[in-house]
Length: 435
Image (cartoon, rainbow, N blue to C red; front, side, top):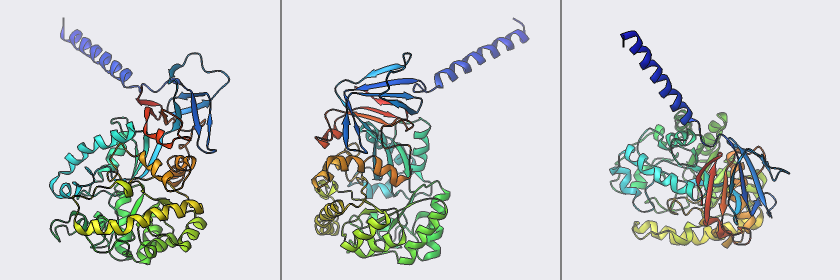
């Protein structure tokens, strides 16, 4: 074979290989699929519909319970299960190893290793039916926003992961709750960080800190309006950011079309954050009648993270942390009940890994234990959370929505803990878990 013929032969082989690779690269979910189940939940109206037939084309739901399903579609018959929309968790820390060892990881773990380790965290949540999460604060001391990278990889289909709306570095005052020096509790002054890492003092630095996170890819901003439980400081509820600093964060984020979530335990800081226009109050441990009325008026969401109040393991935590938890957690439970009865908008959040990754659905049961109905709890983890995100294309099973579908054993409107018995997960038309 001459050189020219040999070159032509190699090029032909190369083109065939490329063509085959492109064929294999076409997502397996880019087809029409009919999902059948015994029943499904209409979360908006709080009712069960039976039977359930959902036609999925590509990444979206084409139609629900049509008169006739497409004859050429692939069929997935799930049998005696209930279809629900993909669950949403609005408060996770996807890069943390677990609830007790993250302090050491902050100083002993390479960022790259932490990112790779966190792939398991993401997969556990997806397999538990959580197709969308909001990542509220990276504690790793690196300028790279690792959860942003995870979110992009998940969107590209490279990893098994929920969609991730990431905050980057949470914004706090020097010595505040989310200052890494206060979280690590190892060597005082070990970290001396500035606005690019979220530690900011005064309106100008807070404005810069917001800009730094958004520049690096953050799509939500987290601020620490008050002190907290897990940091090594005496107070749990004292306001830390000033009213002007909180307003600066909200105004700057708003200029970029980005919402603000406020970590807040104490009443003074919660009230300041609601008045400033934050989208959500995280934890909200001490809610007064005035705060509840203002939250209802302004449509401010409460993300109560209430299951951890029953189960958090503080056996390895510093004494001051245990003391603060004993003080505030009973108040937090009462505040959830009060807010729910008053009709405050509530969105599900767990603070995982303080609730272990993959056990996020236990938050549904905890909300019911605080006085919410099963239907209200389901809305908190679906349509309400989607509204908080500003995501109009998810949170319910309806034509035109993203095909995020979860099948559970049992009827979650009768037993909300059915949400913990997931047997099927589809995200954007792709099946990640099946019976």
